[in-house]
View 1 (tube, rainbow, N blue to C red):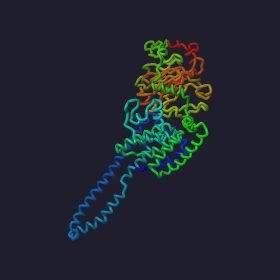
View 2 (cartoon, protein in one colour):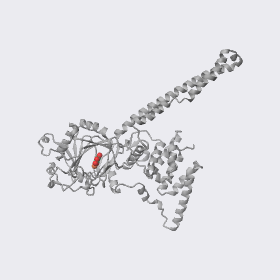
View 3 (cartoon, rainbow, N blue to C red):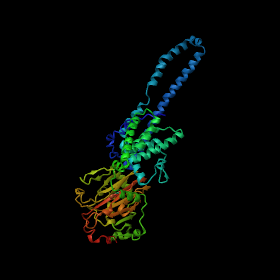
View 4 (cartoon, rainbow, N blue to C red):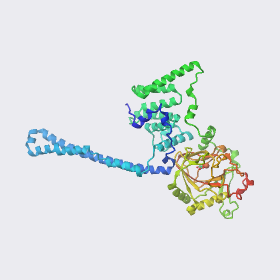
Length: 555
Ligand SMILES: O=C(O)CCC(=O)C(=O)O
Ligand SMILES: [Fe+2]
């Protein structure tokens, strides 16, 4: 079967090879829906309305068809009767009249009905829905695809398992069709990510084969897939394979214009390479990995990324020697009230000091915090290290909102508890930040404190640097979503009701670079946390310098 490209496909692939400039700037920062799971819930509501509307459209179309069918049967029956004995039939003046009537006013009506588009109001509805319902944008589609690729990399998921709806051995959803895989490949291509383009286009090809064997209708053709595969292997420097794939495409569609053009182009390149090879050491200038790195620059160092991903997968467990000195105990900070109901604390790391408090935020408080944050959610931002301005970034994907202590006694109580837990002064702390991560939502390794060069950070607050972080976990996470500290090789797994706490600064006020940490992508489920960032000012009597690093203030 020769498959025609859809308009979008056509326009897109038309610029694939030579139109790289046009593709630059297809970013995903603008997309908002995919950044948190709460937003996705609204999309299901949108879908329900659309299905209902389509059902209505089909019903009226069917009623129109049924009416026309009924009329046709009536005419047919009458016509057969007439044909049996034409002269006798027409001898009857009533029949003569009825035949005339049928062919004039009746047929006019039929014609009108055939012409009349009964579905228009349903089509109009869709236009109106666009104004009132939440729809994802193209950036959202791209963001969701990027999130899936991130999960695939972080959690070492193999392509065909994901396509089967399986995540880490657990069957979650229905299978993906060849077209679903093709679309993922296409999104990766648009991002200049040829590595994932190849993975997903190959999967699309396998699925297409299987679908054909099952005589399943496929919306994508082998030629479409081959074209993308050829482009991506070319972009990765393998022009010979690109040429083979283009030849295969041309066997299917000998008149394929772009393929014919590209074939000539690839052939020239292959010849050029062969010529060069004869003269020099024979290495292909395209085989250079730097091509891929350039097209997909890494935000941070490869080795940290490796550690980070291993921690996210739970592959790096603390050694017995690391674990031995860590204690679980009750603390009261010599506070007479807390003596009666001390907090349960578990040490996660001694230097720098990281602890986990158990059962420190109640379910009803969590419910309140979530409910008040939801309507205020905005895409979470990061501080530009040069300008100090807040901006969105792909290395932090979540939704967040800020809650003031004064807005409700529940918030006030939570903040007072943070003061009790940490023995630090809350007067200069930032408002409570509530964060929701959707599937693939994450925050790549970062520091919570401002580094020396970030001179503009926290300037307006005038409360000094972020001395410490308290992070409440307000949900369990089905799979993924750990908070990890790559340089400490430590991971904290979210557990509803617990909180992690660490000092970001040495007692001297210097930033402790070992506290660099990250929120691993959520693989399945959703993740809710809230941050209380505690500042230096006001802690002079709470964290005397001499007490570091043994933390006697915690006994
Ligand atoms: O969500 C997490 O686990 C960590 C969040 C975090 O590091 C931050 O918001 O600064
Ligand atoms: Fe952080």
